[in-house]
Length: 558
Image (cartoon, rainbow, N blue to C red; front, side):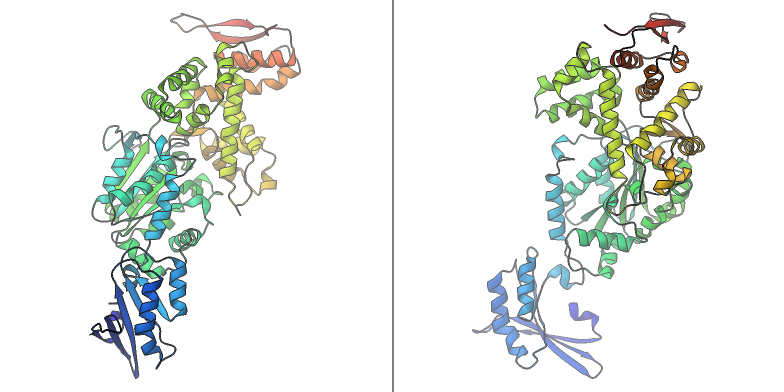
């Protein structure tokens, strides 16, 4: 009973009469003060008539002697609409669900609205979701160690993990564009059906002010979701006892201005929720952290006491998944999907980029006629034009992502492009395949002239470049480009200024074997700037098993 929190309470059942319904009369004693109020019980969802009947036939009899008294009407069924709750209170009746009467928060309306919003989400439509490949990581060992081989359905794995008894943490890592947000959206959408006794609370950290504790984050989230009345102690209770599973999406967006040294600091904030049987699912970009060791160190203490734990890393799309995604994108039209897949195969290195879920979405939305011009290499659009469009769209997305309402200034799209271009040139000129956080900071500090205007130093800029551009982390303190063709495109773009100046040589093109994409881009620049001359570059010799290189001349098309 709600009155049980009183030290002395007596409950008397009042039988129904011809003039009124049955109810409970609760008498409470606190010191010298004795209060008495009726508690009505209604089986089912209430309506206006139910409230009016209880107010007229029960409440007013008590209110005649005590005008300040508030009666309680407890109901089953679905949560009452806020308008009815307010109307009842104006008559002196507190209308509450059975869940609320227990001192808990009735979140059924919240869950229904969240599920409907996810069902209609235009950015992550459920019809496009595909089972995601993943591997389980053992955070007590090196990156190469796994708790099992590659598996094929991350969503089912997380649902099964949520259904286990006891609390714990599930950490979902992955490079940008691998579908972490899509995964956690589907988890939130499906849990009410699969586990109806659990409330999935999807907290998208990018949309919240950057506060200092879990309580503040959850309060801000619920307020934004329209939950008008809730008690923080009740919220903590429901989390601690596993009635709410917290789905925190985008840990890397919880603190947008960090350095790689401090990238894991906010984990302690979120892990405050891991008490009792609390369950927490957390997603983050792998490249938000400098190394897996940094994650291991930050989680070690909590993982030892958190009960069930799951750490998985999502994989890229396979060829079969790319095909299936295109079929779903084109509403089941397999012929059209096959044509688009053939175009992707025919355009230099586009298949490599298509393995990222978000990039494949960009590519699937491109105009087919434009792609056919590129495929035929006879139109006014080249592969380089396509790459420029895709990478610009990607960098624009990263810039927008780093600038939610009220956020501090961050790097612009132009800043990000300049930094990654400098990194691409650095890698092209060296024999290294990756750069570390030191190189990220040095490059950001040397090429970006806007850091002071943004209030950034080179360490903060390094983190934004490493975690919010076109780079992925391939090991501990080892960053490289999401695909080799991206680096080659950026290197080719760096050749544009000397081509515009009609320099007799372009040294960058003479450093390493140039891909067909680079040749296409250089030819495009020559054509645009009408430079009727030869540019020499190093090209792989066809059918040469020794992999030797030769000089080749590239002349612009007429």
